[in-house]
Image (cartoon, rainbow over all chains, first blue to last red; front, side, top):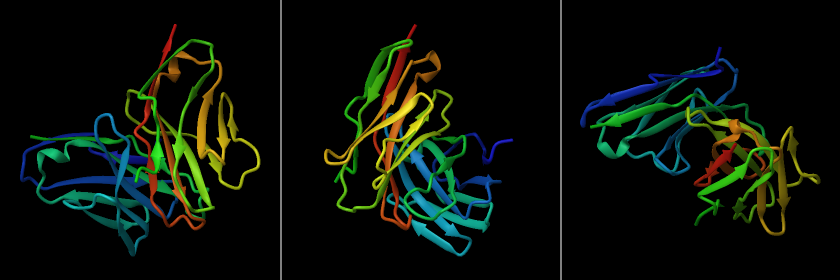
Length: 114
Length: 116
């Protein structure tokens, strides 16, 4: 079984709709992250959480919100989706503890906003 | 300012040959980590290899090695004996600081195609 899972894997929605993407992990990591990837580009950090009570904005947090329901669960919400939020979204986890810390990624959610 | 630069949008290599994917980075922090990830066409991000700024030796993981030239601020990925399954996007990433409280920044990626 995958250590980091994301649901849904694909989603098509309309402008103005509220969307939630969910991430679960069984790695026991404290830290979780949400990224987006636009076609032909690298990943950009949306939000990250170092523990259940710690939520931080990344470089592109506008238009997004998150919820860390438990150590193992981190959800990303688009309150009112717009077409330029069409992208591939990744959840990642890490153990923490220095610059050696490696992030492990989920399979991604492909979101299309019409 | 761009933290991570990958100057090769696309690369081709013949099966069984070695290939080098370039990555340069920009930081004034003496402590940082460099990472390479592989993204096959299926979309997942697969961690390949890590190099710490204080590591004395270049990192190696199987057929992957990292040519770390600190003074030049480069961290090139070398794949030896390329296989068809190596065809994918490859991303270089960096995290600054000793306490892992900073963002991981990614380059734009290099698409590698292995020819039979």
